[in-house]
Image (cartoon, rainbow, N blue to C red):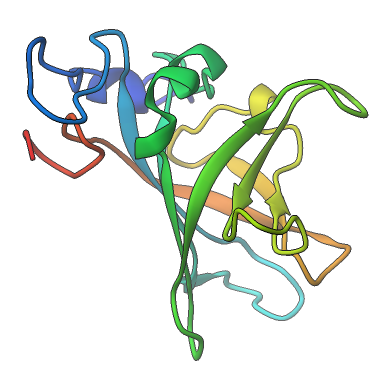
Length: 165
């Protein structure tokens, strides 16, 4: 099956319900749960399903991140970093407009510092489609690490898998 025909477009039925109480997302927001796993590298020649990220992200039907949807649903765009032998880390998916080289998408673990931020490499140009690859730089490492998009699924209106929260 060609790339782009089996990704998040099929999962784009998850939109917010109008009139929901509390923190309902705007009707236009579409969130997907994306699982990234470490791709092949010298330390892990077969990759590692035990090292990666689970991200709730606003994706367009083509699988690309959508800054306009992120602005509407930013409080629901969460990240869990899982790594064998380490405690899970929880943070937020953040879009920073402008800056050197244009806009940046990154993972922010603590609001009060930028030292823990993990920027993605040109994440706005990559499709989060199963089988594709993206790169993320860990906060304490100058090198980017490549991750495979292992799974993409629709989330409920509040960023949870399945239906309404």
